[in-house]
Amino acid sequence: MTLDRGSLAAIFRKNNLLSEYEEQEPVFVWTEIAGELGKVARPKKVQGGSLVLEVPSAAAKQELSFLEEEFLDKLNENLTHSKIDKLKFQLGGFSEEPGRERDSCDIEEISLSEEERKKIEEALADTALDELARRSLKSLLVTQQKKRKARFKEGWHECPACGGVFPDYRCSHCGFDRREVDTA
Image (tube, rainbow, N blue to C red; front, top):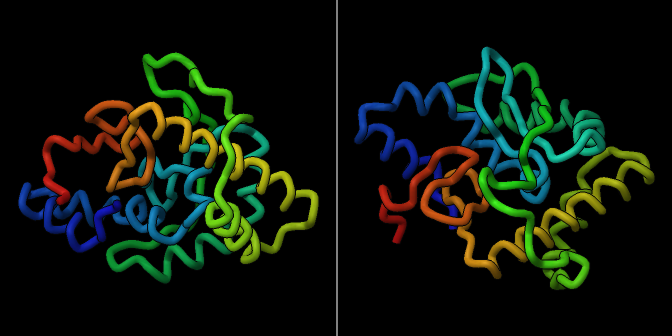
């Protein structure tokens, strides 16, 4: 479950942080518009007119850069408080949680449901990539989805703010603390 922007804005307003929400609005909108690709490029922060996105590999960085204009158009259409001029893809500790060991589960043993595979195919259908780049991005999306499933099996939680997964109470990607907000 993810919180909608109205709920997030209300939480920020209640804590006298509405201006920070408005400045960082692209981080929250990214989660809404990116779909399956958002599992490969996680929003970190807004820096000037750029949205900084963390990616797991140089290959992902290169492939996603081909979709930058597409994402910028979609992102700016959905923003109400700001405008983004550029997406900056940064390599990061995307696949590892700070202080955690590597996943104990072999992801090759994890299978995806037909619905999960369909979502990945739908995400790729809207891209203007050549076949080689499309296959490579598909492989990356499948791997990331399998890692998410493995982590859920290990008791991790999905962040309602950014969509990332984390093992305890605080999301290491956006800082959301699930103890502070009742999302029920």
